[in-house]
Amino acid sequence: MRRLRSTTIGEIKMHDVVALMQDVRTKHFESRQALLLRRGQIGTVVMTYQDGACEVEFADRDGRAFAILPLRPDQLMVLHDTPDFAVA
Image (tube, rainbow, N blue to C red):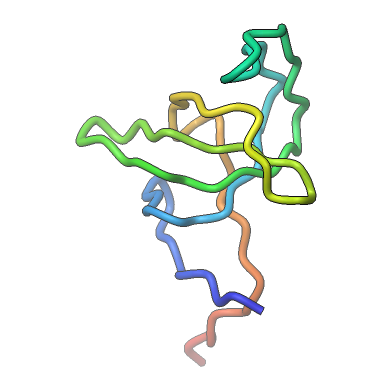
């Protein structure tokens, strides 16, 4: 299993696995067919920008990308698969 990096609030890094916080309308990046990405849809950050925005790739279970779009940090939640150690 791939280990995800810990992320501070508001900081999203390359290769972070993220989930949408709201529905987003977009188009399939090859066919241009209209898509509705639902809240909770999981994607991977493939580019980050200085203003905090990032490009996120959304793919099917076989790894075939169907959407790549720019999103603001407030539209995303970073997902974690390992706990951080708490300071006592």
